[in-house]
Image (cartoon, rainbow, N blue to C red):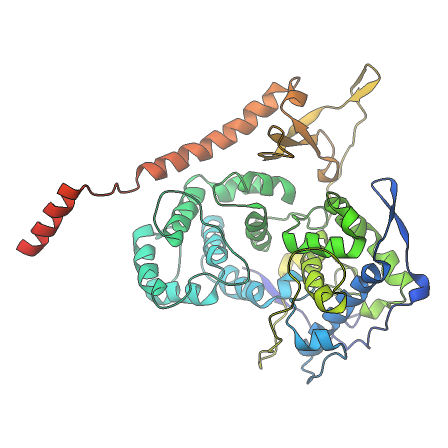
Length: 463
């Protein structure tokens, strides 16, 4: 699989020449009011808002210094120097680099095998678990995937230490098997048996793929997002990460600390605002071009929606020490100290990421008709659903024909009464998954009755 290394002296922007210190933001240039969802929105923490742009610039500068082989200290900021923060660009984080080099970059390059390896690794999200399975089974392939063999290895390993990474919790699906790893292995098999790799290729947008993937049991908003971002490093998928990102609890908390508590419920709009206005904030605050984070020389400076979401989660942590009075999530302290690996970090990229992605062309047709003065648009399909919203009935995220994800709208079932085919098609997708889940649950061994247990025990003694 094609993987390229970023040059240490990329041209013409000298991507890894060492940038100078990021100057503190000018308090005289602070914003007090912005336009959010076509309305004036007063920023309750202007200093916290502006400091985010300094944070991403300085954090990325630290990464560039480490890549260039410079010795510490890499920053004068005491918080960044003392505590661990992930990189501005998710792909440069240690575990993602491992996935790119050792999971995506090695093994059978076919679609099914590549997707299987990514799903398997990210499910456990622990390098040691991956390497254990490789040591016991050799090259891990979908063709030779045997749930019982994998489970046998993990049963023994579970007594020796953790199987899952500790960065975030990965909930197990309720498939009826006793251990989390037993359920997770069967979920991977279900996805692969149902042709998930090929089905994901049919989705043009990351948002659509996410809505479908989250129909599987145990795949929540955050877990589904992480799966897809890893899969997007494969040559088989090319979802534009500038159009949408799934906000997790940490990034929502970061937004609330930037904008103030009144932004609750508008976090997605706030993320879009940050993405669309990012260059103007760097310019307003005097952050020079060389200090603006850039993925690689073939890309313009700035962050995608995905990398903004990633950085907001880290900024939430930074604010606990820098702006302790800013309100957001429940956590109030930093825990993980920064203990840099003595080895120089890697900065690999998928080959397809070294150039600007061509945007999809949208027709954005006008309303097809007016009814009682209200415009009616042609609907395309349902993108996602959520079970409940403020104790109301299930709601569906609807895409309009010829329009993109930024114009999707949440609607109730009653709103879709004039488009029954949308619900039929969506429910057909769900029913296929639910049927596979039911078949898996039917295979769960039933507990032995007392009589059967006594017969088993007496048989064992006789042997």
